[in-house]
Amino acid sequence: MRISLDMDSVIAESVLPTVKWIQENKGQTFEVSQVSSWDWIQDTFKLTLPEVLDMYGKIWGGWWNEVPPTEEDITSKVQKLNTIGDMMIVTSANPEQATGKLKWMKKWGLQNIPLVIVPYNATKEALPFDVYIDDRAQTCLEVAKVGKLALVYRQPWNAGLEESSNLIYIKDLNEAIKQLEERGVSC
Ligand SMILES: [Mg+2]
Picture (cartoon, rainbow, N blue to C red):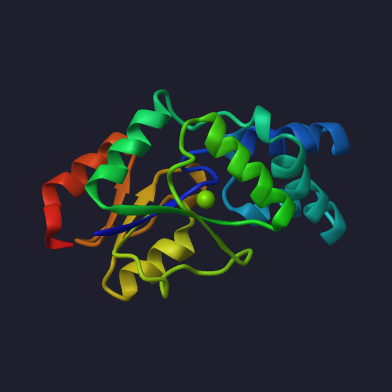
């Protein structure tokens, strides 16, 4: 079983530095629960493209050390997943952000896991994985459409998808572990 594990908002709580960037640059704040899509942030705060690029550059290029994990015991949970199948962390990043993401992985004891970089907003369903743990609704829908298993990491911005045998919401990584252990090598 080949497992694709997303990074932003699945193992790394990168929405928190997003809140910080908006505070510092727009003088406004928001709650994570308000975010109905990633476009919501750009639309609500009327971000220009250079601002969007600056924001994402800051989050991983400059502030990687301030990005908390999404869950307690992130290291042991991710390493447990890594024993269930061949796992890679699959994420989008420019070279500067990729450097920050690698440093973050090392800080949290995940440096043994390969990091795969895909273009920003690229869909992942064509990559050679059987299972995708991801918070992006579009990615999960496309993964499920081609018959692969999408484990949807529940976030305010991915609510309302119709669950099926190969599109399942998980509230945390322990649920992902449970799902994959139950399915065993059959997927
Ligand atoms: Mg994500």
